[in-house]
Image 1 (cartoon, helix red, strand yellow):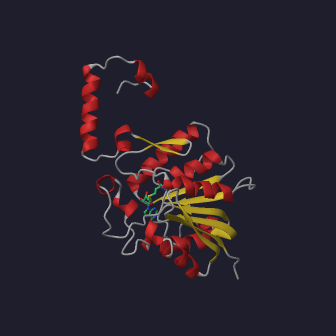
Image 2: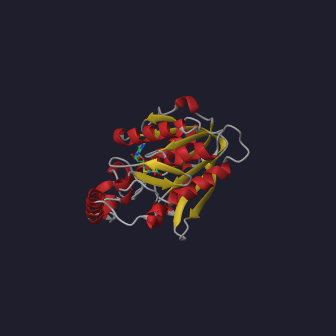
Image 3: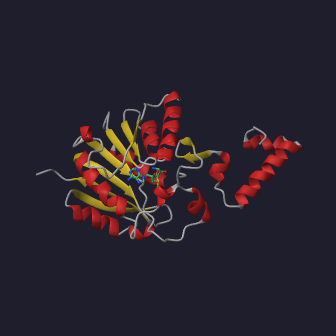
Length: 255
Ligand SMILES: C[S@@+](CC[C@H](N)C(=O)[O-])C[C@H]1O[C@@H](n2cnc3c(N)ncnc32)[C@H](O)[C@@H]1O
């Protein structure tokens, strides 16, 4: 409200009435469970600060670890081809482009409202000097998606909608994250099934796949990945509080 850095608050003795009123109005909205990130319009994610608001999923700290793993897969590859399926704010795609300056990243997002945020954040990052990320409106389960990249992609990464239908979620999530970002069918894995077909098609042999999942899916998702017969080295990884959080694999050699 005051337009100053947080540390500068220490030296401020008073707040004018207009700023105090605006602050009180924001507190009322937060008390109504509007996410803090929607009130500030910003979400921190790794080294970036992303613009967020109504219509886009607020990136979560858990996903930062998926990006950490993804970057490790790209070590030593000068210009890796990377695809982020379900990009939302662009948290994953834009972080990868920022932290691996050679990466050629494509971000795919289906929701027409969310993709406006992807494009907005991508434009801000490109203006700040990061390599431009290609943003595509599309369905990650579409067999025609990114056909020109078939068999060439070094890394497919995704934080897809994975909440099982009917699961209880906090009001901030239920009322403010877009439904398309959350719900994944009866077991939460409906979109992931299509994602696996797309990933198997896009990845080169040996290419890496990383998918975030719900804490209850730490066995089901690895089993699903193994069941396709298209991947090797299937593993699951915990988040910082020890809950199963993402599954990784490598594309096996084609026949
Ligand atoms: C959980 S959010 C993740 C957003 C962002 N990657 C992040 O980690 O913060 C899932 C995103 O996938 C998008 N999505 C859902 N189904 C999709 C589909 N079939 N194809 C492409 N995007 C999809 C949603 O609109 C949403 O933006």
